[in-house]
Amino acid sequence: MNILVTGGLGYIGSHLVSKLIDKKFSIFIIDNLNNSKRSTYKILKKINPNIKGFKKIDLKNKKKLLNYFKKKKIDIVIHMAGLKSVSESYSNVKKYYNNNILGFVNLIETMQKSKIQKLIFSSSASVYAPKISSAIKEDDQLQINSIYGFTKKTIEDIIFLKSKSLRLNYIILRYFNPAGCHQNGLLGENPKGTPNNLYPYIGDIIKKRRKYLKVYGNDYKTKDGTGARDYIHIDDLVDTHLKSLQRLFKYKNIQEVFNVGCGKSITVKAVINSFKKFCNFKIKFKYYPRRYGDLDKIYTNNNKAKKILQWRPEKNLKDIALSTFKYYNK
Ligand code: NAD
Ligand code: UFG
Image 1 (cartoon, rainbow, N blue to C red):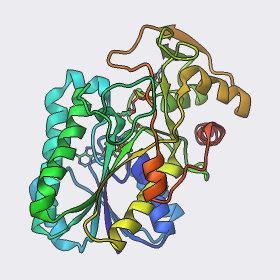
Image 2 (image 1 turned 90 degrees about the vertical axis):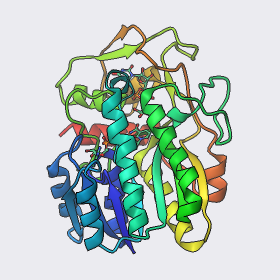
Image 3 (image 1 turned 120 degrees about the vertical axis):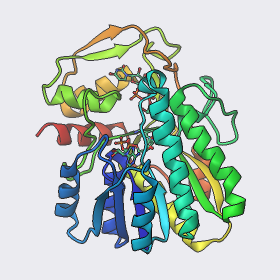
């Protein structure tokens, strides 16, 4: 089975590719290296010498995309490529619109021309209306809270609207907060520039590139006042893709959406403390004002994924801290 992973050299993509190759799938990767590095491909090749190939292609370049699809026999696309910074999306609407939405339109039209009818899409918890009193379920209210969220919701809508005419079988995975690194210590989150997200920023502190963490807000409606998220270990997240692949190849007419998280809300302070407790590493921090657009708390009810995908998260905050520390403390 030939699988194309768009954005396959990114944080989540590279972990997924490594696992898929372990499982003997035949994998193609395209990525424009906007937020990833060619060296990640070298690492993947070192871990899995059977890897088929990486091609630098920007989804915005439809001609190149079409040519690529003509040359390969692809059975399913896992679409992970995209820009993902909520804050940047406010200041650069056009960039997010062009890259995420128009890039996806090019992809789906190319899939249509190439008669590829199976898709897994990396969506996000950012499509939901904020809800802090309880866990979010798939049928909860959707709401656009950021330009980034708008791009994710628009892509979902295009999938819903086009699925009939394309006879598309799809699984949309709405990730909560992926975290942690590969157990071999070779793969991790390695963004370009200053990290926006909590764990890669902590990674910079472990690497001694930065002195302290800026904790954005200590007056949220959470246990200790710091923002709370549903951190899910990258290995558990990757497993939902394997389960989704199995499902898409086993059954016909699959058109489903799943939340992917561990089902617990964990504060920034709890993350900081986990490094002290499990890695004996003290993270210095200072409180800063709230970051624009941040929510108090967001976590998922993961029963649907557990029941239908026959999946359950097996790792916890300790595994996330240990694998993160191992990757950055090199
Ligand atoms: P990432 O930035 O590490 O990986 C995305 C990859 O896509 C990068 O390698 C980048 O170079 C590539 N890319 C971007 N635009 C492209 C384009 N036009 N053409 C080709 N390649 C392009 O991000 P990630 O954390 O691995 O996220 C993967 C996907 O999951 C993204 O779509 C993101 O929105 C989604 N997601 C991530 C999180 C998270 O917290 N990491 C949460 C929810 C959803
Ligand atoms: N935080 C800090 N300091 C930092 C970075 C983050 O205090 O330097 C805090 C944030 O304020 C928030 C928590 O850590 O309370 C998590 O922030 P992240 O930036 O790591 O994650 P977000 O929840 O803001 O966003 C992530 C992805 C989005 C995705 C969303 C889905 O970046 O793409 O999860 O829940 F949409």
